[in-house]
Image (cartoon, rainbow, N blue to C red; front, side, top):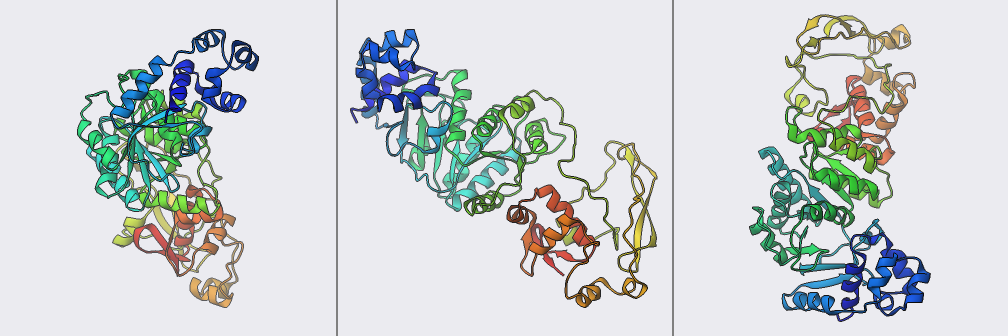
Length: 478
């Protein structure tokens, strides 16, 4: 334990320039060797600035010893960069802390670890969502990491604790500093259900810049980051940016387009973050990742997230997958059954922003011998534009085959779907669906396709009566 004196000294020497900790440790083999090194060695390493070399030659451990004794006296543990139980993923971030102070029980870091972040002033929707996600994840042995702030952080910690799980609170100040932010009660209970963690000495006060600085640790400790609710310029987006820089997956919970507190999360999704609709989405992602399946989302960079923080309006819509127009429809129900409404991936038009609504008329279909909808233009109070009439048509089938139900056509062809009936993507999706229910996220992870493209394919297959929806957004073959 005395060894940590040198780690405390080294962290004070480097201050915020921690990107050099890895090369220094590699060059010298440990903090004690850096402390005992002479001037010639320190200068020869070319890893310290002239002012740092001057301070390093002071060889004074008094301040480090005082910090060390305060920590020990108050039951605060320490873990240093070259200790065996230092978090492995944290070693690989750009500025890893030399020493971490913690109070509570050091958790198992081998399973799924999720950072849950969001606004300090959430809506009731955000509060419930943060709690429910954390509760469900913790029940499934995931470690919940957050920042101990009021708002989303607080509800994430609370959900993990009440599920009987473990949670880590990464502070922007020393563990002994009494920071009154409205979340003191939940923060003080965390050592019994996980740990408080800080890179700052125990009595170090809170400063605004330290909260944004600690976000790299929140992201660095975890496998992925979940942004529950965040407006423009939200600090939660700083954590998302750090996660992006570290190559971590970012999940975002969609919110109301009318709520400014969801602008950041909605823009993250539009930028390419994974959409999280249930805590199970993260569990499925973790399972697929452990099996070597790649994520279906679009890679996001730190610069992209920083750009989102500056946006005060939603990002413009753009397709990230090609639009497949060769889709034919066998039926169009004006009022689908309730279970289909619940599982529908299409938005219902509403009189919100002014526009046009498609008017449906019937004409012979080339798919099942029945009718297919013809889209014509008719003014509406939705968006102010018009919907073009589809121009692409499938090749005509022989008359006998046209008049056969689709299910009979499939049986006659030994369940082999004609190649010209579906897009290539829809064929791939159809091949993964069996008699057992499966959802879009699971399909996307199994075949390496984006969730958006899978959803389009599922819609195509459902309209062609090749699959049918069951509970919770899952599908089976007909």
